[in-house]
Length: 250
Image: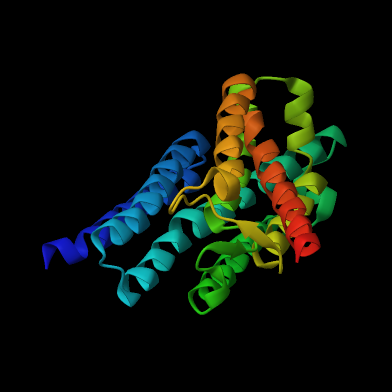
């Protein structure tokens, strides 16, 4: 009984991490939120690994995994995007020498809620994942953990890579609205993406995954948090290229 539930206990640790991340995000502590989202994603990776290693995969585990991801990789990035939009509109109105409410009237009070489009799109993507038998060894659309890291990298770049020009660029409200739209789209796009799983490793068929992981580590070491959006974009582009090559071979 205990062995069968080990993966579920790990999944609950993911959910617990997500709940703590929500508290940090609501209070505007994006660094704390990012730390617990990263911890939740860590548990999310190992619950599936544990289930496969122990041979105890179950429908309960699949549903529980999506519920945990909904909080860690769906609710948290939505809150962070909303908070970033609030801050960006305040800064933008200040540049116009206006009060936020004078800049956009009542719209200002509600427009940041657009950030929760990320949460809604994440919920739809997770529900669709559970009934899509095409996503057993790869993904269709960007996985919610990757999308969460993309959004949470913004406040981390601002916090730790103190470049005024870069901060001004990232806190542009129109950029953030565009990123919200892109994020909501790419989560549910009919775009096949490879999964970083190494079952029965073969250099010929899966060597590119290892190369990609090594390059990711190098980029993170050199560029720090700026590397995160670069890695996500590279992941999508590499998947597109691999899909094209596969179609050509077929």
